[in-house]
Image (tube, rainbow, N blue to C red):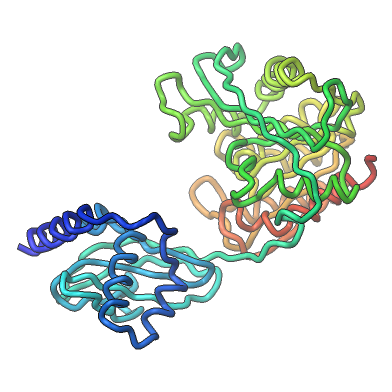
Length: 406
């Protein structure tokens, strides 16, 4: 009966909206919801808030009871449709907050501030019965000015191609995005920086905003003119674009030289041919970067071919036993030091599971690198597993990595 109530109300609301579609507006944010709830809203304003909340959380998600929390920095918002008063509780039953009704169709919302670096499970209850459940992770870092487009700083350009004829990883297809610095001329000799999980890091509006950082640092001569090659992990030929790349773990977590051969024999020659690029010959002018499994992949590429890649940028690197990567700290200690410069970043809230403890693994990497007198740096914060913790550190990490290359 409750489900029928929800669906019938939403169908009527949807039909009414369809009769008079307003001009497109950006979705309301959790901050704006919180401000509107505090205001003494008139009926017209409350109806407008109701419609904006439905738009933010999604009509179908609300109708089917599978809507998740929305997070803006450290502000968290929940919504549900239920004819009875509802509340948000933690999985241990402790109250997070009572929900506020909006309108006559059972839509309810709750917004609150949560401590930064909070991760917890929750459920929404009505009359003691769970309506839906999920988890919320609050993780916010302020970006520096170097991650924001600056006036009078010329922008590089991004070009993309698809690669599906790999001999090293047959039966895969992937997107490759190439960043060419502002004013790039065909045949110009530049430094090179390869990025794993490329599309997300090539996005000027993504977590890392690498092209924006490149623009600003190159303009200020705080890093050399560099072509960025952003490579997605391979997906199977039958997979649709945007889906989880089935070959990622095999390509990134495996030890050995397969991935660096893929770069040197396939992708980089294709980039040079398509875009008339010319990478500088000195290995000190070649860098490689990635997070998580992309981090260990980057280290492996440089470890296997230090005659090509001398600089490594890794954050929340998976130096654990996914495919044998946990041996690196010991291997570093018993192998003659290689001419590598290595930047690591991890956070105290990173993963801990059956494959290993990520913070401990990165500390062991740092200890081994220090013992062997490598040129390395490790930065720490409170980040979870992902790229958010790397974002505010990226400009300084690139300055450090490229500090002696003009």
